[in-house]
Image (cartoon, rainbow, N blue to C red):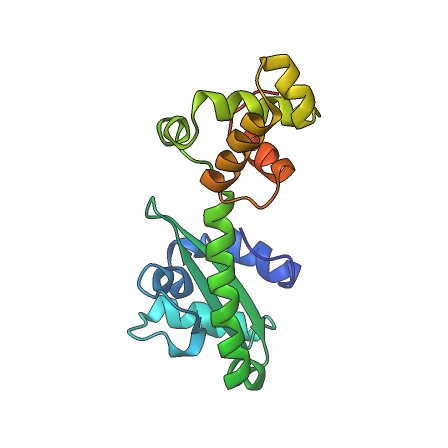
Length: 184
């Protein structure tokens, strides 16, 4: 996917020539683990050099790419383009490093977890309690439904929050629902 801030003509030209297959920016993403500037990519072939030269002519004089490597081996690549003086700025490069770390953390946090791992994260009691939380019940109401004390319900909800690394019962219920752990 090409960022929407690129000139439309360039995007059409790029896609029409199937440049994704020979783009050195994409190639570098599988090698680099930190943000990199396009003009720092080494070992360019003639076709790759031509692509970068054509990008400059199309209004993309420089760029900074932020690769985010996933556990399955895939790479999410964020490309930022602008004038060379902006791309070469040391402070902006450090900010890009921080952004890449944040992207990675958020993508990891939002990635679906496997069914097998999900079933090991929570006990059956925690799943039942979170399901009732997702349905809008208070601890007292859940306790009455389950025939347990509200202290026991709070304990299971607290342990579920801890297991899911969530700071509120609502966040834990939403996360568990999104991950398919519970079916509200």
